[in-house]
Image (cartoon, rainbow, N blue to C red; front, side, top):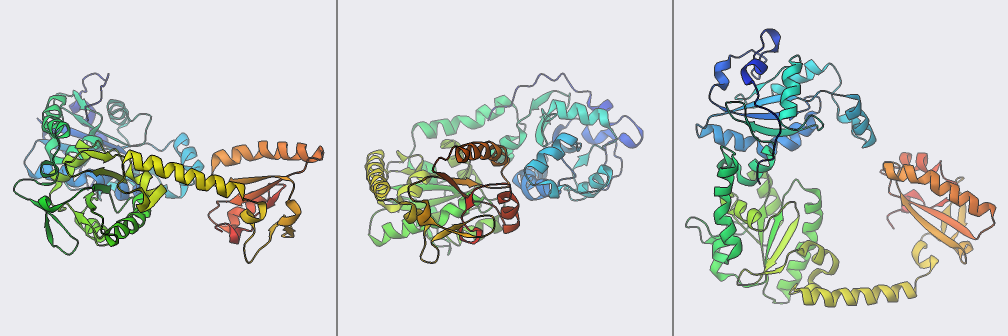
Length: 460
């Protein structure tokens, strides 16, 4: 990750952070500090909304705060500075549109600020909201003047080193200091070589460790692995990961029961060891030790993993068989073994043939009727037999009240529906809800003139 370019001029740090009075930099207790605390240090400028604690404390800070502490514990010249994001009408509107307005802390911003900074590590310092000039200048320098959060690193002379601080810390952890482009290029060089000439030993062993671990602590030699070998990049905090993992477990167990050579190595993106242990306990395969963060980091770097879940499948020579194995296994499960492009193409053709056969035999009743229900409903909860719709053109409208694009499209669909009805066309629409609760369903369906699948039966 290269530092982002910045057009911001050299920052006058001392005059910005220490203008005098109640605008001076403060510690986590709200007590003013002296300019000696930033002398000769790189500043980490973390911009964030003190009024949105769940975002900062539960999601962002856990991803890098421990790395900052590690750097400081090593005696490196680094001072973190929190800069509060002002609460604007535009931000309130965005949060309301995404149904997250309830996460905003009520009360004056000064109170939210004072409360939040007490939760920061004691080494951190903060810019009071009253220092509007510093807040504006530092948000501009960190390129967060139009965003809610960001992390920039600024040299002691006021030059912006990078505005991609969070990405760099996540990618390189404590090794990233002092965050310069030249230093990051030096860090990247050995990984570029490993990416060019990969081996299982080079990928999975590190500093004398020649084994992987099971969730019961058993060690398994890397040299004993037989391909295909899948690298599973995942994390406990990631909802899509937790949703995919059971499917992967089912695939893994099926292949093992068939005696086929296949192994998975968990490469964690968890933020702490407790989360790792809890997540790994559900997995029947192997893992890199959580403590070996450099080996973990190397794999994310070599395979350019930008998000989780990600599953890369290798052969015994560490050559890539399948880069997008999450999609492949989600679509075909263990039937896609050994996960080569040729096998995936074969399975794609088989699945398409199955879908064509299903479509050929498909009817309105097969889609909408269950063993317990042979009807849909109107606004009076009156039952309308599905059989009465046979012969009509029927639109299945998948929508939800919480979805802004849905709410924007629904009036247009109503206009078309009413026009077709006035023309006597044999046309009907059935609303299939993705609403989170029945109250939202009732409110949204109340605006629609067509039929609906009963809310209680929407999953079927």
